[in-house]
Image (cartoon, rainbow, N blue to C red; front, side, top):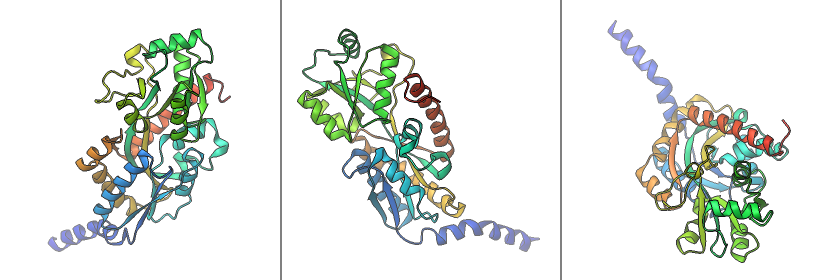
Length: 319
């Protein structure tokens, strides 16, 4: 009986031992669907470095920007199913573009990707140039109502998180903000500083230096940030609908074997939960926020439904 019990224990441990012994067998490519130097790119690379230490293999960041993150996400979908290529797309590529502009994506995120875990979040923030005549969100809404089309807000493009933030504000307040699409944060900020547009809605990381030096004023944020206690959320100014923030998760192609995910998911969790990572990401306006795959998928589904409802109400889609 003792020999039988020992044998059962050994056999039960074999799958885990096999996974640990065979994966990873070499370097891991980490696809980042953004341009190099973006705050999320820097954060993704930092987590990749921590993951490399966990797995004891190199983790090599590969930037694949374009189509609002859709090009890089498509590359993850088409990667080999051996766990040696994973990626870190955000909710614009995973949720928003599929709803608003499905012709620009060649995948269905919930079907064509293996979720590995939530990595990080960044608040969206509405800022305006320091010379604008409105100094609060309510003043901006009143100004917009009295001056139709005169409050132009730059975003990262049609179908971006910022685009939906503008739609949300308009639907709740009637402010009549004009969304101006850009191909990235840098040109939008340049135009705001030059007076071609009145403000932008972008990830907090891109705006923190300008807020700190007084170049811009923060009027609204999707979630509270310790360093900006005076910038309110939509709930704080009297609305129940929250503003969309930006979240980023780890994914592999659909069909990753359990021998891979059983190693990769806990290693990613340890990397994201590292106090070193939390401290480093906060300097870029990003919160390290681990959630297991099933919770991330539940959030994706809920956000997809919210996005579809707002898009339909705004006339962006018909279904």
